[in-house]
Image: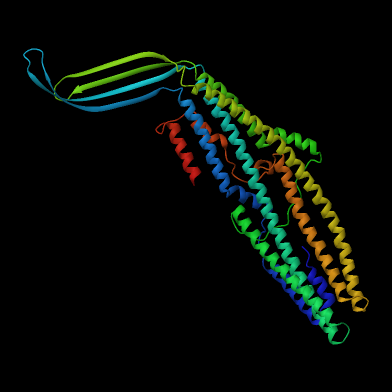
Length: 482
Protein backbone atom coordinates (compact mmCIF):
# COMPACT_ATOMS: atom_id res chain seq x y z
CA UNK A 1 0.00 0.00 0.00
CA UNK A 2 1.61 3.26 -1.11
CA UNK A 3 1.57 6.49 0.88
CA UNK A 4 1.63 8.72 -2.16
CA UNK A 5 0.57 11.82 -0.27
CA UNK A 6 3.82 11.80 1.75
CA UNK A 7 5.83 11.38 -1.44
CA UNK A 8 4.16 14.33 -3.12
CA UNK A 9 4.09 16.43 0.05
CA UNK A 10 7.90 16.54 0.27
CA UNK A 11 8.04 18.35 -3.04
CA UNK A 12 5.31 20.83 -2.17
CA UNK A 13 5.53 21.46 1.55
CA UNK A 14 7.78 23.79 3.49
CA UNK A 15 10.91 22.89 5.45
CA UNK A 16 8.84 22.89 8.61
CA UNK A 17 6.49 20.31 7.13
CA UNK A 18 9.46 18.15 6.21
CA UNK A 19 10.80 18.32 9.78
CA UNK A 20 7.37 17.38 11.19
CA UNK A 21 7.11 14.46 8.79
CA UNK A 22 10.54 13.20 9.87
CA UNK A 23 9.61 13.47 13.54
CA UNK A 24 6.38 11.56 12.88
CA UNK A 25 8.26 8.87 10.97
CA UNK A 26 10.75 8.43 13.82
CA UNK A 27 7.88 8.19 16.32
CA UNK A 28 6.24 5.48 14.27
CA UNK A 29 9.48 3.51 14.07
CA UNK A 30 10.09 3.81 17.82
CA UNK A 31 6.53 2.76 18.59
CA UNK A 32 6.91 -0.22 16.27
CA UNK A 33 10.11 -1.30 18.05
CA UNK A 34 8.81 -0.83 21.59
CA UNK A 35 5.39 -2.47 21.15
CA UNK A 36 4.93 -5.86 19.46
CA UNK A 37 2.62 -5.65 16.48
CA UNK A 38 -0.70 -7.42 16.78
CA UNK A 39 -1.09 -10.44 14.55
CA UNK A 40 -2.94 -9.56 11.37
CA UNK A 41 -5.81 -11.71 10.16
CA UNK A 42 -5.06 -13.70 7.04
CA UNK A 43 -7.39 -14.85 4.30
CA UNK A 44 -7.28 -18.35 5.80
CA UNK A 45 -8.40 -16.93 9.17
CA UNK A 46 -11.31 -15.22 7.47
CA UNK A 47 -12.35 -18.41 5.67
CA UNK A 48 -12.18 -20.37 8.91
CA UNK A 49 -14.50 -17.80 10.47
CA UNK A 50 -16.87 -18.00 7.51
CA UNK A 51 -16.99 -21.80 7.70
CA UNK A 52 -17.39 -21.90 11.47
CA UNK A 53 -19.96 -19.13 11.90
CA UNK A 54 -22.15 -19.69 8.85
CA UNK A 55 -25.82 -19.98 9.74
CA UNK A 56 -26.49 -21.03 6.14
CA UNK A 57 -24.27 -24.08 6.60
CA UNK A 58 -25.99 -24.94 9.88
CA UNK A 59 -29.38 -24.65 8.22
CA UNK A 60 -28.45 -27.00 5.40
CA UNK A 61 -26.78 -29.47 7.76
CA UNK A 62 -30.09 -29.69 9.59
CA UNK A 63 -31.85 -30.26 6.25
CA UNK A 64 -29.40 -33.08 5.56
CA UNK A 65 -30.24 -34.67 8.92
CA UNK A 66 -33.92 -34.42 8.01
CA UNK A 67 -33.16 -36.27 4.75
CA UNK A 68 -31.29 -38.91 6.80
CA UNK A 69 -34.44 -39.41 8.84
CA UNK A 70 -36.40 -40.04 5.64
CA UNK A 71 -34.22 -43.10 5.08
CA UNK A 72 -34.99 -44.28 8.61
CA UNK A 73 -38.72 -43.71 8.11
CA UNK A 74 -38.75 -45.54 4.78
CA UNK A 75 -36.78 -48.48 6.18
CA UNK A 76 -39.05 -48.73 9.21
CA UNK A 77 -41.79 -50.13 6.95
CA UNK A 78 -39.74 -53.31 6.62
CA UNK A 79 -39.64 -53.81 10.38
CA UNK A 80 -42.38 -55.31 12.59
CA UNK A 81 -45.12 -52.94 13.69
CA UNK A 82 -46.44 -53.33 17.23
CA UNK A 83 -49.39 -51.43 18.62
CA UNK A 84 -51.90 -51.84 21.40
CA UNK A 85 -55.41 -50.73 22.12
CA UNK A 86 -57.32 -50.62 25.39
CA UNK A 87 -60.75 -49.45 26.41
CA UNK A 88 -63.58 -49.62 28.92
CA UNK A 89 -67.15 -49.99 27.70
CA UNK A 90 -70.27 -49.33 29.74
CA UNK A 91 -73.35 -51.03 28.26
CA UNK A 92 -76.89 -50.11 29.36
CA UNK A 93 -80.16 -51.53 27.97
CA UNK A 94 -83.52 -53.20 28.50
CA UNK A 95 -84.93 -56.22 26.74
CA UNK A 96 -87.84 -58.72 26.83
CA UNK A 97 -87.11 -62.40 26.94
CA UNK A 98 -88.94 -64.88 24.70
CA UNK A 99 -89.95 -66.96 27.70
CA UNK A 100 -92.37 -65.32 30.05
CA UNK A 101 -92.11 -62.01 28.28
CA UNK A 102 -90.25 -60.58 31.26
CA UNK A 103 -88.49 -57.27 30.88
CA UNK A 104 -84.80 -57.45 31.79
CA UNK A 105 -82.25 -54.69 32.34
CA UNK A 106 -78.67 -55.13 31.09
CA UNK A 107 -75.87 -53.26 32.75
CA UNK A 108 -72.27 -54.28 32.18
CA UNK A 109 -68.83 -52.68 32.43
CA UNK A 110 -66.25 -54.39 30.26
CA UNK A 111 -62.51 -53.68 30.07
CA UNK A 112 -60.60 -54.94 27.05
CA UNK A 113 -57.10 -54.76 25.62
CA UNK A 114 -55.42 -55.94 22.49
CA UNK A 115 -51.80 -56.28 21.32
CA UNK A 116 -51.40 -56.33 17.55
CA UNK A 117 -48.32 -57.21 15.52
CA UNK A 118 -47.83 -56.80 11.77
CA UNK A 119 -44.92 -57.62 9.48
CA UNK A 120 -44.63 -56.96 5.78
CA UNK A 121 -43.68 -60.17 4.02
CA UNK A 122 -43.70 -59.15 0.38
CA UNK A 123 -44.74 -56.10 -1.66
CA UNK A 124 -42.85 -56.62 -4.93
CA UNK A 125 -40.05 -54.34 -3.72
CA UNK A 126 -42.14 -51.20 -3.31
CA UNK A 127 -40.84 -50.45 0.19
CA UNK A 128 -37.22 -51.32 -0.64
CA UNK A 129 -37.40 -49.02 -3.65
CA UNK A 130 -38.75 -46.28 -1.38
CA UNK A 131 -35.68 -46.73 0.81
CA UNK A 132 -33.43 -46.45 -2.24
CA UNK A 133 -35.19 -43.24 -3.27
CA UNK A 134 -34.55 -41.78 0.18
CA UNK A 135 -30.88 -42.82 0.00
CA UNK A 136 -30.40 -41.14 -3.37
CA UNK A 137 -32.05 -38.03 -1.97
CA UNK A 138 -29.57 -38.07 0.93
CA UNK A 139 -26.66 -38.27 -1.50
CA UNK A 140 -28.09 -35.34 -3.47
CA UNK A 141 -28.55 -33.33 -0.28
CA UNK A 142 -24.95 -33.97 0.73
CA UNK A 143 -23.77 -32.55 -2.57
CA UNK A 144 -26.07 -29.57 -2.12
CA UNK A 145 -24.42 -28.98 1.26
CA UNK A 146 -21.01 -28.92 -0.45
CA UNK A 147 -22.36 -26.42 -2.97
CA UNK A 148 -23.53 -24.23 -0.08
CA UNK A 149 -20.09 -24.56 1.51
CA UNK A 150 -18.53 -23.27 -1.70
CA UNK A 151 -20.88 -20.30 -1.73
CA UNK A 152 -20.02 -19.49 1.89
CA UNK A 153 -16.26 -19.67 1.29
CA UNK A 154 -16.42 -17.65 -1.94
CA UNK A 155 -18.42 -14.98 -0.16
CA UNK A 156 -15.76 -15.05 2.57
CA UNK A 157 -13.05 -14.38 -0.03
CA UNK A 158 -15.09 -11.54 -1.50
CA UNK A 159 -15.72 -10.03 1.95
CA UNK A 160 -12.01 -10.19 2.81
CA UNK A 161 -10.93 -8.66 -0.47
CA UNK A 162 -13.74 -6.12 -0.21
CA UNK A 163 -12.38 -4.75 3.07
CA UNK A 164 -8.83 -4.63 1.68
CA UNK A 165 -10.01 -2.86 -1.47
CA UNK A 166 -12.14 -0.37 0.46
CA UNK A 167 -9.29 0.33 2.91
CA UNK A 168 -6.84 0.99 0.08
CA UNK A 169 -9.35 3.27 -1.60
CA UNK A 170 -9.75 5.26 1.62
CA UNK A 171 -5.97 5.57 1.94
CA UNK A 172 -5.69 6.59 -1.68
CA UNK A 173 -8.40 9.21 -1.31
CA UNK A 174 -6.84 10.54 1.89
CA UNK A 175 -3.52 10.93 0.12
CA UNK A 176 -5.32 12.65 -2.73
CA UNK A 177 -6.91 15.13 -0.34
CA UNK A 178 -3.54 15.85 1.27
CA UNK A 179 -1.87 16.40 -2.08
CA UNK A 180 -4.64 18.67 -3.34
CA UNK A 181 -4.62 20.59 -0.07
CA UNK A 182 -0.95 21.28 -0.62
CA UNK A 183 -1.63 22.15 -4.26
CA UNK A 184 -4.30 24.62 -3.16
CA UNK A 185 -1.90 26.15 -0.63
CA UNK A 186 0.78 26.46 -3.28
CA UNK A 187 -1.68 27.98 -5.75
CA UNK A 188 -2.75 30.49 -3.10
CA UNK A 189 0.86 31.46 -2.42
CA UNK A 190 1.57 31.86 -6.12
CA UNK A 191 -1.60 33.93 -6.52
CA UNK A 192 -0.47 36.30 -3.77
CA UNK A 193 2.78 36.97 -5.59
CA UNK A 194 0.98 37.30 -8.93
CA UNK A 195 2.31 34.16 -10.62
CA UNK A 196 -1.18 32.70 -11.26
CA UNK A 197 -4.71 34.02 -11.55
CA UNK A 198 -7.72 33.58 -9.33
CA UNK A 199 -8.95 30.98 -11.81
CA UNK A 200 -6.06 28.67 -10.91
CA UNK A 201 -6.97 28.93 -7.25
CA UNK A 202 -10.63 28.19 -8.01
CA UNK A 203 -9.62 25.13 -10.04
CA UNK A 204 -7.58 23.84 -7.11
CA UNK A 205 -10.49 24.49 -4.73
CA UNK A 206 -12.91 22.62 -6.99
CA UNK A 207 -10.54 19.67 -7.32
CA UNK A 208 -10.07 19.53 -3.55
CA UNK A 209 -13.84 19.56 -2.99
CA UNK A 210 -14.21 16.72 -5.44
CA UNK A 211 -11.45 14.80 -3.65
CA UNK A 212 -13.19 15.25 -0.32
CA UNK A 213 -16.40 13.97 -1.85
CA UNK A 214 -14.52 10.95 -3.16
CA UNK A 215 -13.05 10.37 0.29
CA UNK A 216 -16.49 10.45 1.89
CA UNK A 217 -17.72 7.92 -0.67
CA UNK A 218 -14.71 5.68 -0.04
CA UNK A 219 -15.26 5.83 3.72
CA UNK A 220 -18.91 4.90 3.21
CA UNK A 221 -17.90 1.96 1.03
CA UNK A 222 -15.45 0.85 3.72
CA UNK A 223 -18.22 0.90 6.33
CA UNK A 224 -20.37 -1.23 4.01
CA UNK A 225 -17.49 -3.65 3.43
CA UNK A 226 -16.94 -3.95 7.19
CA UNK A 227 -20.60 -4.84 7.74
CA UNK A 228 -20.41 -7.47 5.00
CA UNK A 229 -17.26 -8.88 6.60
CA UNK A 230 -18.89 -9.04 10.02
CA UNK A 231 -21.94 -10.77 8.58
CA UNK A 232 -19.96 -13.36 6.62
CA UNK A 233 -16.94 -13.95 8.87
CA UNK A 234 -18.70 -13.48 12.21
CA UNK A 235 -16.58 -10.62 13.61
CA UNK A 236 -15.38 -7.17 12.70
CA UNK A 237 -12.18 -7.08 10.65
CA UNK A 238 -9.02 -6.20 12.48
CA UNK A 239 -5.76 -5.57 10.72
CA UNK A 240 -5.83 -7.65 7.55
CA UNK A 241 -2.75 -9.15 5.96
CA UNK A 242 -2.18 -8.63 2.25
CA UNK A 243 -3.78 -11.43 0.24
CA UNK A 244 -1.60 -14.52 -0.21
CA UNK A 245 -0.32 -15.83 -3.50
CA UNK A 246 -3.00 -16.92 -5.91
CA UNK A 247 -4.12 -20.57 -5.79
CA UNK A 248 -2.81 -22.92 -8.44
CA UNK A 249 -5.21 -22.83 -11.35
CA UNK A 250 -5.01 -24.84 -14.54
CA UNK A 251 -4.52 -22.80 -17.68
CA UNK A 252 -6.57 -25.30 -19.71
CA UNK A 253 -10.16 -24.08 -19.61
CA UNK A 254 -11.52 -27.14 -21.39
CA UNK A 255 -9.86 -29.45 -18.87
CA UNK A 256 -11.39 -27.36 -16.08
CA UNK A 257 -14.83 -27.67 -17.65
CA UNK A 258 -14.39 -31.45 -17.86
CA UNK A 259 -13.30 -31.51 -14.22
CA UNK A 260 -16.37 -29.49 -13.23
CA UNK A 261 -18.62 -31.95 -15.06
CA UNK A 262 -17.16 -34.77 -12.97
CA UNK A 263 -16.93 -33.29 -9.50
CA UNK A 264 -18.96 -30.09 -9.15
CA UNK A 265 -21.43 -30.67 -6.29
CA UNK A 266 -24.35 -29.13 -8.16
CA UNK A 267 -23.76 -31.52 -11.05
CA UNK A 268 -23.54 -34.55 -8.79
CA UNK A 269 -26.61 -33.46 -6.83
CA UNK A 270 -28.59 -33.21 -10.07
CA UNK A 271 -27.42 -36.68 -11.09
CA UNK A 272 -28.55 -38.17 -7.77
CA UNK A 273 -31.90 -36.41 -8.15
CA UNK A 274 -32.40 -38.01 -11.56
CA UNK A 275 -31.53 -41.41 -10.10
CA UNK A 276 -34.01 -40.88 -7.26
CA UNK A 277 -36.72 -39.92 -9.75
CA UNK A 278 -36.07 -43.09 -11.79
CA UNK A 279 -36.40 -45.22 -8.67
CA UNK A 280 -39.56 -43.37 -7.65
CA UNK A 281 -41.24 -44.51 -10.87
CA UNK A 282 -40.45 -48.14 -10.11
CA UNK A 283 -41.64 -47.74 -6.51
CA UNK A 284 -44.92 -46.20 -7.65
CA UNK A 285 -45.50 -49.04 -10.11
CA UNK A 286 -44.71 -51.64 -7.44
CA UNK A 287 -47.29 -50.14 -5.08
CA UNK A 288 -50.02 -51.14 -7.54
CA UNK A 289 -49.25 -54.81 -6.93
CA UNK A 290 -50.47 -57.04 -4.06
CA UNK A 291 -48.94 -56.93 -0.61
CA UNK A 292 -48.60 -59.86 1.78
CA UNK A 293 -48.51 -59.22 5.53
CA UNK A 294 -48.20 -61.39 8.60
CA UNK A 295 -50.64 -60.30 11.32
CA UNK A 296 -51.03 -61.48 14.89
CA UNK A 297 -53.01 -60.29 17.88
CA UNK A 298 -53.47 -61.06 21.54
CA UNK A 299 -56.64 -59.84 23.25
CA UNK A 300 -58.15 -59.93 26.73
CA UNK A 301 -61.59 -58.86 27.91
CA UNK A 302 -63.00 -58.76 31.45
CA UNK A 303 -66.46 -57.91 32.74
CA UNK A 304 -65.89 -55.72 35.76
CA UNK A 305 -69.43 -56.44 37.05
CA UNK A 306 -68.78 -60.18 37.28
CA UNK A 307 -66.00 -62.69 37.24
CA UNK A 308 -66.38 -63.31 33.53
CA UNK A 309 -63.31 -62.76 31.35
CA UNK A 310 -61.96 -64.00 28.06
CA UNK A 311 -58.61 -64.14 26.26
CA UNK A 312 -57.75 -64.87 22.68
CA UNK A 313 -54.94 -64.94 20.19
CA UNK A 314 -54.75 -65.05 16.43
CA UNK A 315 -52.12 -65.21 13.72
CA UNK A 316 -52.51 -65.19 9.98
CA UNK A 317 -51.28 -64.12 6.60
CA UNK A 318 -53.21 -61.40 4.82
CA UNK A 319 -52.88 -60.47 1.16
CA UNK A 320 -54.48 -57.50 -0.55
CA UNK A 321 -54.33 -55.19 -3.51
CA UNK A 322 -55.91 -51.94 -4.58
CA UNK A 323 -56.50 -52.35 -8.31
CA UNK A 324 -58.88 -49.43 -8.88
CA UNK A 325 -58.99 -46.04 -7.22
CA UNK A 326 -60.66 -43.81 -9.74
CA UNK A 327 -57.51 -43.48 -11.84
CA UNK A 328 -55.34 -42.29 -8.95
CA UNK A 329 -52.91 -45.20 -9.33
CA UNK A 330 -52.18 -44.48 -13.00
CA UNK A 331 -51.98 -40.77 -12.22
CA UNK A 332 -49.32 -41.42 -9.58
CA UNK A 333 -47.17 -43.27 -12.14
CA UNK A 334 -47.52 -40.50 -14.69
CA UNK A 335 -46.69 -37.92 -12.03
CA UNK A 336 -43.50 -39.80 -11.13
CA UNK A 337 -42.54 -39.96 -14.80
CA UNK A 338 -43.10 -36.22 -15.19
CA UNK A 339 -40.91 -35.55 -12.16
CA UNK A 340 -38.20 -37.75 -13.67
CA UNK A 341 -38.38 -35.74 -16.90
CA UNK A 342 -38.16 -32.51 -14.88
CA UNK A 343 -35.03 -33.73 -13.11
CA UNK A 344 -33.47 -34.66 -16.44
CA UNK A 345 -34.20 -31.17 -17.70
CA UNK A 346 -32.66 -29.72 -14.54
CA UNK A 347 -29.56 -31.84 -15.11
CA UNK A 348 -29.19 -30.33 -18.58
CA UNK A 349 -29.59 -26.81 -17.19
CA UNK A 350 -27.06 -27.43 -14.43
CA UNK A 351 -24.54 -28.79 -16.94
CA UNK A 352 -24.82 -25.70 -19.12
CA UNK A 353 -24.67 -23.32 -16.14
CA UNK A 354 -21.55 -24.99 -14.77
CA UNK A 355 -19.80 -24.76 -18.13
CA UNK A 356 -20.82 -21.12 -18.41
CA UNK A 357 -19.63 -20.31 -14.90
CA UNK A 358 -16.24 -21.86 -15.61
CA UNK A 359 -15.93 -19.83 -18.79
CA UNK A 360 -16.99 -16.61 -17.06
CA UNK A 361 -14.57 -17.16 -14.17
CA UNK A 362 -11.67 -17.74 -16.56
CA UNK A 363 -12.63 -14.67 -18.61
CA UNK A 364 -12.71 -12.52 -15.47
CA UNK A 365 -9.39 -13.97 -14.35
CA UNK A 366 -7.73 -13.21 -17.70
CA UNK A 367 -9.23 -9.71 -17.77
CA UNK A 368 -8.05 -8.95 -14.23
CA UNK A 369 -4.52 -10.15 -14.97
CA UNK A 370 -4.31 -7.99 -18.07
CA UNK A 371 -5.78 -4.99 -16.24
CA UNK A 372 -3.35 -5.43 -13.35
CA UNK A 373 -0.35 -5.62 -15.66
CA UNK A 374 -1.51 -2.60 -17.65
CA UNK A 375 -2.22 -0.56 -14.53
CA UNK A 376 1.33 -1.09 -13.25
CA UNK A 377 2.72 0.45 -16.42
CA UNK A 378 0.10 3.16 -16.31
CA UNK A 379 1.05 4.06 -12.74
CA UNK A 380 4.75 4.31 -13.60
CA UNK A 381 4.04 6.57 -16.55
CA UNK A 382 1.54 8.68 -14.58
CA UNK A 383 4.04 9.22 -11.77
CA UNK A 384 6.67 10.43 -14.18
CA UNK A 385 4.15 12.65 -15.95
CA UNK A 386 2.86 14.10 -12.69
CA UNK A 387 6.36 14.88 -11.41
CA UNK A 388 7.29 16.47 -14.74
CA UNK A 389 4.13 18.57 -15.04
CA UNK A 390 4.46 19.77 -11.46
CA UNK A 391 8.09 20.78 -12.04
CA UNK A 392 7.18 22.54 -15.26
CA UNK A 393 4.39 24.36 -13.44
CA UNK A 394 6.89 25.79 -10.97
CA UNK A 395 8.77 27.19 -13.96
CA UNK A 396 5.61 28.67 -15.42
CA UNK A 397 5.45 26.30 -18.40
CA UNK A 398 2.35 24.52 -17.10
CA UNK A 399 -0.91 25.72 -15.62
CA UNK A 400 -2.53 24.63 -12.39
CA UNK A 401 -5.12 22.77 -14.47
CA UNK A 402 -2.34 20.73 -16.08
CA UNK A 403 -1.03 19.75 -12.64
CA UNK A 404 -4.49 18.78 -11.43
CA UNK A 405 -5.15 16.72 -14.55
CA UNK A 406 -1.86 14.87 -14.13
CA UNK A 407 -2.62 14.18 -10.47
CA UNK A 408 -6.08 12.89 -11.42
CA UNK A 409 -4.57 10.59 -14.05
CA UNK A 410 -2.25 9.12 -11.41
CA UNK A 411 -5.16 8.70 -9.02
CA UNK A 412 -7.21 6.91 -11.67
CA UNK A 413 -4.31 4.59 -12.48
CA UNK A 414 -3.83 3.62 -8.84
CA UNK A 415 -7.58 3.12 -8.36
CA UNK A 416 -7.63 0.87 -11.43
CA UNK A 417 -4.86 -1.25 -9.95
CA UNK A 418 -6.68 -1.66 -6.63
CA UNK A 419 -9.86 -2.77 -8.38
CA UNK A 420 -7.92 -5.09 -10.70
CA UNK A 421 -6.19 -6.79 -7.78
CA UNK A 422 -9.52 -7.40 -6.04
CA UNK A 423 -11.09 -8.71 -9.22
CA UNK A 424 -8.08 -10.97 -9.78
CA UNK A 425 -8.44 -12.72 -6.42
CA UNK A 426 -12.21 -12.95 -6.63
CA UNK A 427 -11.94 -14.44 -10.12
CA UNK A 428 -9.25 -16.94 -9.07
CA UNK A 429 -11.36 -18.31 -6.24
CA UNK A 430 -14.43 -18.20 -8.47
CA UNK A 431 -12.58 -20.56 -10.81
CA UNK A 432 -12.07 -22.95 -7.89
CA UNK A 433 -15.75 -22.69 -7.00
CA UNK A 434 -16.86 -23.24 -10.59
CA UNK A 435 -14.86 -26.47 -10.76
CA UNK A 436 -15.96 -27.74 -7.34
CA UNK A 437 -12.62 -27.23 -5.57
CA UNK A 438 -13.48 -24.37 -3.20
CA UNK A 439 -14.10 -26.45 -0.08
CA UNK A 440 -12.61 -26.59 3.39
CA UNK A 441 -10.90 -29.83 2.42
CA UNK A 442 -9.63 -28.46 -0.89
CA UNK A 443 -8.25 -25.32 0.79
CA UNK A 444 -6.90 -27.33 3.75
CA UNK A 445 -8.55 -25.04 6.27
CA UNK A 446 -7.83 -25.85 9.93
CA UNK A 447 -11.49 -26.42 10.87
CA UNK A 448 -13.53 -29.18 12.45
CA UNK A 449 -15.16 -30.71 9.40
CA UNK A 450 -18.81 -31.70 9.56
CA UNK A 451 -19.13 -35.49 9.20
CA UNK A 452 -22.10 -36.10 6.91
CA UNK A 453 -22.07 -39.85 7.63
CA UNK A 454 -22.11 -39.79 11.43
CA UNK A 455 -25.76 -38.91 11.86
CA UNK A 456 -26.83 -41.08 8.93
CA UNK A 457 -25.12 -44.16 10.32
CA UNK A 458 -26.87 -43.66 13.65
CA UNK A 459 -30.41 -43.24 12.29
CA UNK A 460 -30.48 -45.43 9.18
CA UNK A 461 -31.66 -48.45 11.19
CA UNK A 462 -34.37 -46.45 12.99
CA UNK A 463 -33.09 -46.72 16.57
CA UNK A 464 -35.53 -46.32 19.43
CA UNK A 465 -34.97 -43.74 22.14
CA UNK A 466 -34.21 -46.37 24.78
CA UNK A 467 -31.72 -48.37 22.72
CA UNK A 468 -27.96 -48.01 23.09
CA UNK A 469 -27.77 -46.53 19.60
CA UNK A 470 -30.60 -44.15 20.44
CA UNK A 471 -28.73 -42.90 23.51
CA UNK A 472 -25.64 -42.37 21.38
CA UNK A 473 -27.80 -40.41 18.95
CA UNK A 474 -28.99 -38.18 21.79
CA UNK A 475 -25.39 -37.35 22.66
CA UNK A 476 -24.67 -36.43 19.05
CA UNK A 477 -27.73 -34.19 18.92
CA UNK A 478 -26.68 -32.39 22.08
CA UNK A 479 -23.22 -31.80 20.62
CA UNK A 480 -24.72 -30.41 17.41
CA UNK A 481 -26.95 -28.03 19.35
CA UNK A 482 -24.05 -26.42 21.20
